[in-house]
Image 1 (cartoon, rainbow, N blue to C red):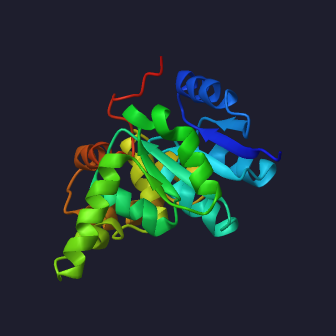
Image 2 (image 1 turned 60 degrees about the horizontal axis):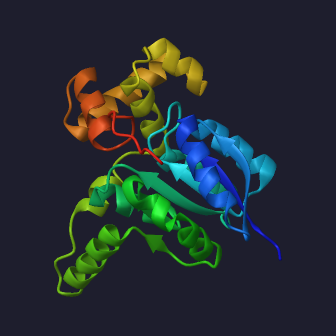
Length: 226
């Protein structure tokens, strides 16, 4: 039997070890690699060609949403399951708009992870039960002409703006951000100005609060696997 190859992407080793331990008990699933940053996930995907990626959203350097965007642009057939401590509708919709195969809340992902991987590999979508219920409710509302505004809000930032937002929120100065992204300091400053204008935010502290609230960077809430 050919096993489903899986790449685990999470910046906490204890989480990766816990997920690997759970999946090693499944005869049809094989963990072929681990990444601790979004950038590493992109690089390892090119090298290992996993069938399914289990991706944390809140990772350093490059968050899971942006890593998903880059991976699926290069390899559209890859199936990506996003993990998060946050279940905000706007980010669930952004994940699905990017082409993610599913979205799992970390607190219950361990219970359904193997099933989610199998469904994703089959080409199906899979969501944590609470998210699935909300998505179904929103679809029903849309049929009655009451579709929400979150999709529009979620799409407001470009790929580069998302990268700059994360690096700024992580405390990087313009010079560091420019070096990390391979662009000029002046370009970073322009991106920061556009971010603040689009989001209605007027200082770096506000950008940081926004990034935490959106789950782009860590807010201290982590999954513990026993």
